[in-house]
Image 1 (cartoon, rainbow, N blue to C red):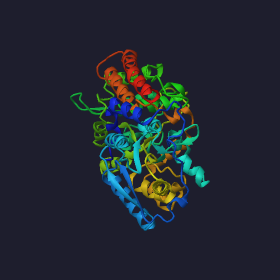
Image 2: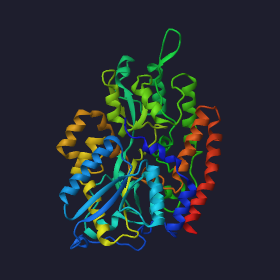
Image 3: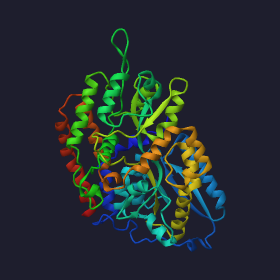
Length: 468
């Protein structure tokens, strides 16, 4: 199945993060240039330089790594004698960012680095990169082809800091065969928590001994999902305009909607409509493809794997990410990772060469190849209009749900997502609160308040490290 790198990321060491941020930055304003005096050079920076070699650190494995290699080979062939990109695999997202932090201090940084979504605040604060917006402005081009809600995550004050690359968003996945058998319409999936409960009561199946053989609903107690529910409710996950008006100081875990969500989830488990699952998404994914849960939550990146694993057993349908309340008017946040052009210690030729590669990966044809090879959402509007992409979606109509969901999500600070230096710790804290409430019976508000209070220290430490 697809990569689980985004789940590993919550293990970042705050001590390492704050130490590196302090060494690399004296930033006091959140939307100031991330280039530390470096500007975006023009295309002429490559004139007379021969073939400029650049290093790209990434965390793509399996079919994702193969697709990236294919694109890099295409770029190198197209730019022979001018630019050559060398791919360097750095294991997980966590390991890649840790290696980058160490390299900043040693002066051995790559030219381009792939960083997961929740590392964005650190990358801005490090002041080690040239913002993508600077290249766009220097070239007198636009970002009009990038999906607005995708660009929105990596933007502050309308400045795009990095180029979105491997992008995903959450969906509700349905066992279409089980829905039909239970007399439910898979073309009209549940839209709210209450509707999930209603459907789950019809979908839950027990054997002659009363043992549940198919649960109506089941999903991992994954912190990313809590962030999604917050955005769907058009609420901000952290203060300071979701960390976009200033550095966030508080993560809003103990909200009424979060309490309502965890109480609902606990009740689903108590009624036998949902199994006890922890934060390991692989366990929930395997339960869904095995047919032991009829509805689950997962990323668009899981679609191809789900279709392959369920082939010959049952059909799959998809629905929008569910709402906590019928009146919720927001939408999900994108996830994944983006590409950063390193400026610190780099000459103009290398910065320009890096931009040429990043620009290539973001164009409609490259994104169509990337989307159809990996299942990640294409950042390019034009990619969805290419013939190869249209054929791919036609063969996988379940993905159309994601396209429509993204296009219908209003762009706001809530749906842009929270930018926080201690975001990996915040995600882990959310998971601990979710598990305490759903699995251990801790009162939901108490579980959330405890983790919210515990986060105050790490958030303060990070903020002080970059403003000292």
